[in-house]
Each structure stands twice: as structure tokens, then as C-alpha cells.
Length: 234
Image (tube, rainbow, N blue to C red; front, side, top):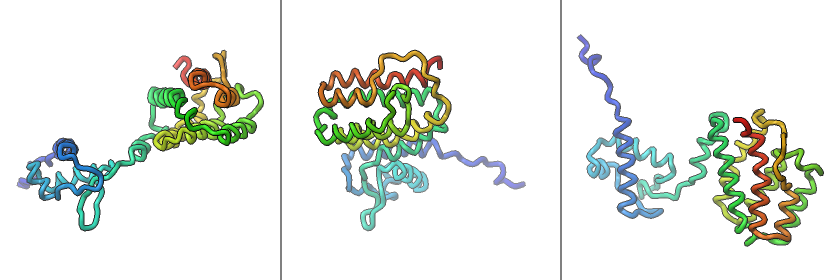
């Protein structure tokens, strides 16, 4: 009789999950900083009371998340994770359902309304001229082109750049494939009754002569029509 066949393979995935959580907690408790070396695999085995295989798997997960990396002569050290790099790997628009797409657009709405103060703090006369060039290349009747992806990328990308916030710029680049997918997916409905609409040119006029509060309201009007076309009756 093959006694080996009578034994089921032990599933250690839940143990690895717990060890991963414990490792993160340990690193927080010890107040490790970027560049600090963490305990060796053997030391972690003794601290956590688990096998080296389990510790190695948990450390691999931390590496994939960008929390640690291997250095010659230093072993594993704490790193500053590329948050958006990790997040972007799961931002495949082909596997996102409609609710998630809606939430991504809601995040965009919050960001682009909320960054008005940053834009007004940093915008220069040169930026205004660059934005004018962008809108001059758009069709005259811009409300008939509410979701032209090329215009969206050029104009809104420039706004993110003006904020001077690198995290915002990375997040916008991460969202671009989603906007492009929506544009080409057939999800956008034909333009129906429009709410009050502010074009890109109208936004530039406010940036040149208005205030952050006026810009916030105008951006809300500008983007809400995108929402109507994507999510009406959904």
C-alpha cells in the first residue's frame, strides 16, 4: 500500500498570509527606515517560529510589493515602494467591471476638481499660452467632442503637469489606459441632453482670469457630462 497517497498535501498559503502580516507589523514596530537592513531569513524563522520556506515566500511577496529589495553585503533592505507601479499592474481595463470603471471616473472627478488650488499656485503665463495652443487645435464646437481621447490627454495631462505633484501625474498616466478603453469600448452613449457644459477653452479663460473656486465649479460641469454619457441608465 502506498502510504504516501493517504496523506493530503498541507496548504500553507494561510500561514504565509499570517507571516506576511506579521512581517509588516514587525517592520513597523521596529521603526525600520528606507535603507535599513531587516533580520535575515534564519533570524526571522526564530522570531516568528516558522520554517524558512514560509519566511522566504512571505519575503518574496514583500519584494513584489516593493517594500524590500536585496542588496549585496546588506541582505534585504527597506525600500520606498512605487505605489502607483504596484497599483497599475491591476488596472487592466479589460478585467474591470462597470462599477469599478465608474469609481475610477469618480476619482478623476475628485482629483481634477480638488487640484484647483495647486494649479493656481503654480500656473505661469507660459503655461496659459501652452494651454491656449492645445485648445486652438480642438474642434470649434467642442461640446460635440466631449470625449475625444487625444484632446483629453493633451489638455488634462497639462493640468496635472502644472500642479507640480509627481504622484498626481503618475496617477493620471495610470488612468489613461482606462480612459482609452472606455473611449473605444462602445460604452459611451450618444450625447443626449447636456447639463451646463464648460469647454477646455472655457477652463483656460478661468485659469487666466478667474479663481480656484470658479475653476472647481467649471471643472465639475466639464466632467459631469462625461459621466452622463458613460453611466446614464446603467
